[in-house]
Every structure is written in C-alpha cells, then in structure tokens.
Length: 216
Ligand SMILES: CC(C)(COP(=O)(O)OP(=O)(O)OC[C@H]1O[C@@H](n2cnc3c(N)ncnc32)[C@H](O)[C@@H]1OP(=O)(O)O)[C@@H](O)C(=O)NCCC(=O)NCCS
Image (cartoon, rainbow, N blue to C red; front, side, top):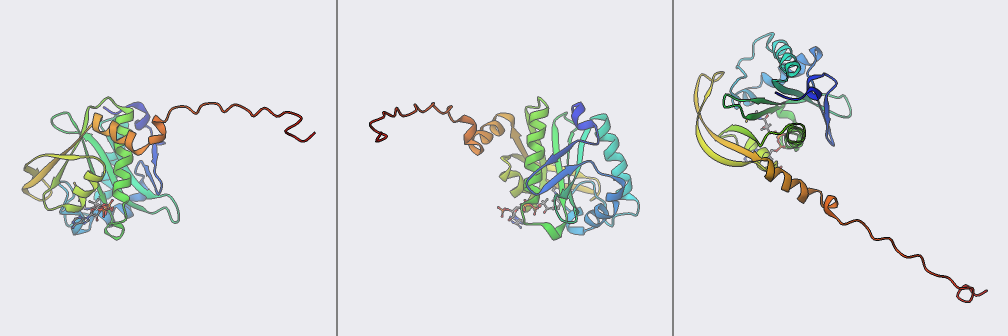
C-alpha cells in the first residue's frame, strides 16, 4: 500500500520540465491519442490495439480508484509550461509477488528528449522516500531498447530474462527483468548531489585593522 500523501488528488511530483499528477476526466483525449498508437501499445502488456472507444475514460476512473485506495500510484506526465499538454503516463503498483513494479508510456512525438527518464527518476525517488520498499522492479520486452535505456539511466540493472504473459498482446513474450535496490539508489543520490556530503564551511577570521594600516 502506498502512503496517505499519494492517495489525495492534490499529490503531484514536479521535475524540471514535467508535472506528474493524478489523471482527470479531461485527460481522456490526450491519453487516447497516446494509447491508440501501435508503437506504444505493442510494448505494453495491457494496452489493447486497436484502442477501444471509452478505454481512456475507464483507465482514468480505475487509476483514480487505485490511487485513492493506495494500491497504485498512477500519474499522467504533463508539460509544465506552454499548453500544459499531457504527453505520457507513469505508474507503480505491487505485482503478484508483492513487489513494486513500475510502468510508463509516452507519446511518440515526444520520444528521445529525456522525458521518460525524467519522469521515472522522479517516481523512483518518491517511492523510495515515501515507502520502506527495499527495491523497485520493471519488466521490459527484450526488443524494447528505448525502455531499457530509460531504466539503465535511472540506475536499474538486469537481473534475468524470462517469458511473461502480455494479456493485451495475447501471448507470452520474452522480457528482461530489471531491478533497482534501495541501497544502489541511495549511493546514486550521493553521487548526483555532492553538496549533500560537503563538510560545513569553517568560519573565516575577520582581519584585524590597525590605525596604521588604514593610513590614519
Ligand atoms: C520507452 C519510452 C517510454 C521512452 O520514452 P522517451 O521519452 O523517448 O525516453 P528518454 O528520451 O528518456 O530515453 C530513451 C533512451 O533510449 C534510447 N533509445 C531510443 N530508441 C532506442 C533504440 N532503438 N536503441 C537503443 N536506444 C534507444 C534513447 O536514445 C534514449 O537514451 P539516451 O538519452 O541515452 O540517448 C517510449 O519509447 C515509449 O513510450 N514506448 C512505448 C511504451 C513502452 O515501451 N513503455 C515501457 C514498457 S516497459
């Protein structure tokens, strides 16, 4: 279960370029535009293709219910400036083994600009800061180099391969299993923020001025 702070729809994560916030009814058109793209759906286990009418509205309701109950953190990624367009989704939930697993998808028009990495980074930070989870996991199709790139840039490492059921694709697919341990995340945070480990500055003694030195 995720903590109370994530269960209220004012919960929001802010990154340099994005706001990650709860989905709202008015996001349906943007989410439909993303989920109905074949190149997005084919990498996911749950997005059907073609994407049926009403599926985005159902997703929004389900996500808000799961967020409220603390079963999930399901957020949309919105550009923080300009038209404040919704360009993707990120989520975290407990898998069948009771471990936290993340998922994400972004609009192809915005691929390759670091948005997914920025969003996943923020989600990972929030999970480790707000819970006691020892690790976060993800499953990625072996052919999904972009998603593997996102996970590696966020500190995840491969811990195995296997066949996983992709219900929306109708079968089993080869996947790589990725994992990020809390202790690895912690050490990466220290590398990224050296100012956190700098010793306190020593006070500098004020110079002593004599009347002579000042030319008086
Ligand atoms: C995976 C996905 C979210 C990545 O989104 P994104 O915003 O383009 O990701 P980023 O820009 O943060 O990073 C992608 C990285 O993968 C790299 N990449 C992209 N395509 C690649 C390819 N074919 N081979 C190798 N690397 C590739 C990019 O160069 C980038 O790395 P870099 O910053 O070191 O150059 C997006 O492709 C997507 O939505 N795919 C469909 C849904 C999906 O796969 N979801 C994840 C399921 S596990």
